[in-house]
Length: 298
Ligand code: KIV
Image 1 (cartoon, rainbow, N blue to C red):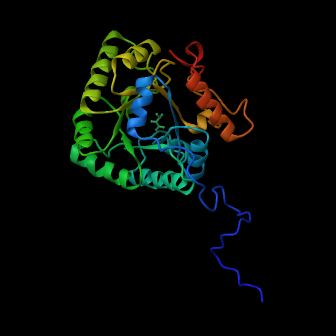
Image 2 (cartoon, rainbow, N blue to C red):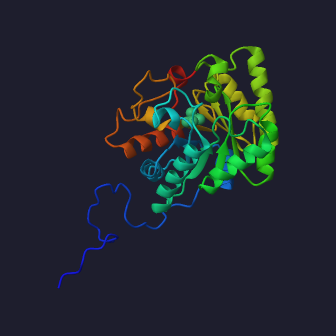
């Protein structure tokens, strides 16, 4: 007599929506941790980061060797179709963080997961920031990221003192796009560069172990990278001399339907698969051929 079909069959047959393997394979690499990232920083090995918003792309990026996955609030634009990141809610960030983490757990993947604290979720002060960060950490993030300098230092210290690793974000901070008047290079004048330096040092002193530098002149980013010995600079439009690089996934896969920012390279151009494009990105960042200051920086 034939066996009745069960809904949770574990056979190796193809599954229609199965972009993740049905059973997990043994872990291939040691998980990325804060001490491992600090070692890479000290050794001068470039840190690679891409944004990820769902389970499958997270698993593929990990398999391609991307060390850090940023559940960026850029998901408001690339997943939700918003015009900017201001409308992204904490609940949406929690949903996408859980999806990314589930994808990594299903494949026993090892990436370090950073989740963005969205606009309005830390602006009231440190207690609100702690409550919001707890939501993202309980969704499985290893670190939270918040934008801005000056007023954020005391929030960073409050979170770090409570065991929450923090990545800061300076230069072009998309959550303040209306105040900045658009997506423009930051830190160009002497005064702006000096403020950026002060903010970066204050954030390092507060305990931030990473800082994203977005659309900052390459010489300033290089100077900050040398000066910040305990906080790894992660550049996006900040030249090649930062401790690591980050790109928005959809940009580096060439599926930005708007105008491609100058600092992006389309890694799908010379790849035959998404994983291949991600591997090419990792390789180019590690060997220092991306970004190219003559094309991708200011
Ligand atoms: O939200 C995001 O994707 C980011 C990156 C642009 C760094 O913050």
